[in-house]
Length: 428
Image 1 (cartoon, rainbow, N blue to C red):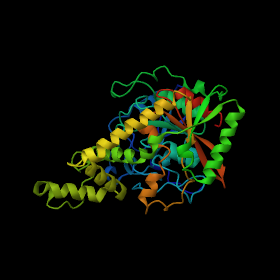
Image 2 (cartoon, rainbow, N blue to C red):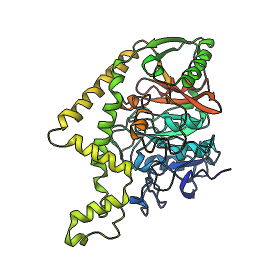
Image 3 (tube, helix red, strand yellow):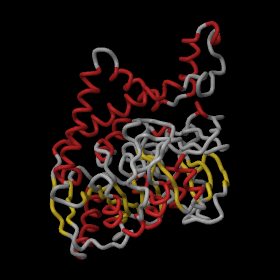
Image 4 (tube, one colour):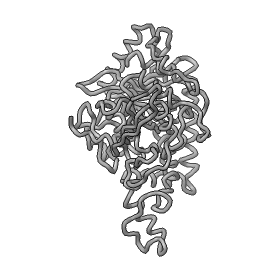
């Protein structure tokens, strides 16, 4: 097989001898801390960083018997939709190596799709588990915010991102979620809803009494091949007795703009620590040295070690938070976020789950998105609203167009992971 560049760092860390995931190999996205194993976040800034501890999710996987098989490639600091912004080169899609695997968890999804790992962990800030799952033809779950601990995750946007599993089937993804879900004293945002979970048991494919709301706003924005495949997949739900209704969420028109203002603002704050002193590789020739001119050394370190997309998002986020613009941009984005959440809440009074194509387009070819950041941002249109509203969602394979996978996304009410697992398991 063509070298897909799925891993940044190879590893083989054994877990417990027994457990629900005994012997299961796991690719761990490279922004999740692993004790003694390099964790780079896909960035030259952290090229030599080795965490002294495991993230809670990694600790739980090892306790369940899983084997950490390596650190998966990713867009730098999770900023991208194609896994092409990695300082360690792009990952290729196993379905078609001339195309991207999606991002930012592209290495994780590609490793599973290629059979290089049984399952994987990704992180999802605005679709970064669901997008690569869709592009690679596998299953990805974005849990409700607070269901899975973020302790040990190198933050991009704290209020949006969650760790989630990627696997060949819904049942296997749910088994991983059963292991990693639940409260954590090291993370005050976690809830106890997952403490006694059995999400895998919900993967029975029984949708006979389910009402599925099709989000027309997002279906209409998808390309014809994606829309046709999505609608064909829905026919299987009709055949199994599910009721399909149309739903409109007016706030989604503003979701992309709100998401990127919030995410970039949080990123500008979170990435301030990478200065070559607290964290990060120092610039090779910092002007004057830290004793002479710290500001120049700080600037040179970040200029040398951050990639173009990370710099772009830091600059935009800093601008949105600056004096005179905070109320104009960041506050307005938070108001839009509340509107998105309200629209979802009202929709769930009428339906059990919402359905959309996961991605509005087929996997692009390598290089197509790099020169057009706006095009890359807009491709997240179907996924970002879920993170704004802190809801659970799953992407499952819906079919293929000329051999390229199309994903179907189900969104559920908060902490209703069983419902989205049940819905998705009919197809995978």
